[in-house]
Every structure is written in C-alpha cells, then in structure tokens.
Image (cartoon, rainbow, N blue to C red; front, top):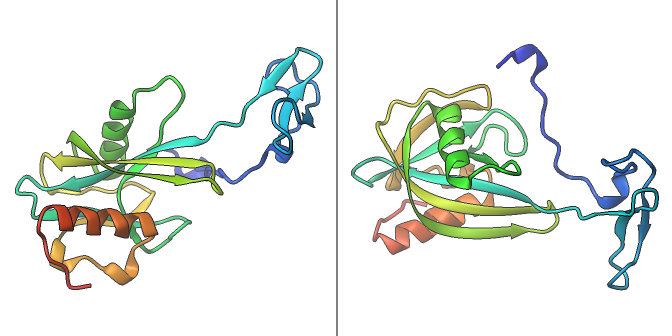
Length: 187
C-alpha cells in the first residue's frame, strides 16, 4: 500500500448526501414512494430507485491454537485510535464474506486463519452497519501489523485491557466468548 495516498473510508453519510444517480448522472430527488416518512432516492431520468444498503462488516475473534489467548489490534485510526479491537473489514459487493474475513486478517496481521462458528451479530443503524463476528483460529502468534494498527498481540483472557477497548461490541464479544468457554477475566 502506498502510504502517500492512503484514504480513510467515511461511512457516515445519509440519503440526503447523495445527489446524483450512479447509472445516468442526473440529479436524484428524495421522495416517499412506498412507506410514508421513509423517502427513497429516485432518478426520474432513468427510472432508478437507489436503496442505500447497510454496509456489512466481518470481524474475527482470533484465538491461538490452544484457545487460551485472543488477538487484539491497537488501532492507528479513528474511530478508536489507540484502543484495542478485533481485526476485520467491510465486505465488498460480490465478495464472499469468509474470503473477505481471511483476507482482512492476513492483511492486518500477517496471520492465516481458519474460520469457525459465528459468535455474534450487531446492528448499528445510526452508522448503517451490520457486523458479523466469527471465531477463528490463527496458524501462529507472530503478528505483523499494517498501517491500520499500531501493534497487535495475543492476550491471555485475564490480561485483556478492558478499559482500553475501542468498541462496546468488542467487549460484548469477549465477555460472551469467555462466559461460553468458562474463561475468567480481571476486568
């Protein structure tokens, strides 16, 4: 990745922010078409209705082979810069979510993973996100982070920095996983 042209993905936009049709380039109008008070973006030129779909995010709760440590990354960008979170990323239209998850973890940590069961789901309507969290097992514990993270490491469950987690969903997944697998925490 060329660090000189690194762009941040800004996902917090609303229907009102989108002005032009991606099909023909004409101006959108915002109109109620099916449900009152839920306007849709309409292009009268090409008869296109643009539905602003939520963004799908896949996240990995990466464990070591013994399942007694969990991988967290210290974020190098907002939201949550300097705080700890799981690796993951957005699923592009037309891409497989399991391949996306494996690729994101590899890109962010250098690790290869084996994806297991789904751990939890989260819906964030205000951000237009749906998050799927999967358990994954890493091939080793040698983490090499990219520009998105300051550092990454595997924590024993009693070492997790509870007061320095980037997102409420990270804490919820960690506590859920620990409860399910009879791990204890110091936080």
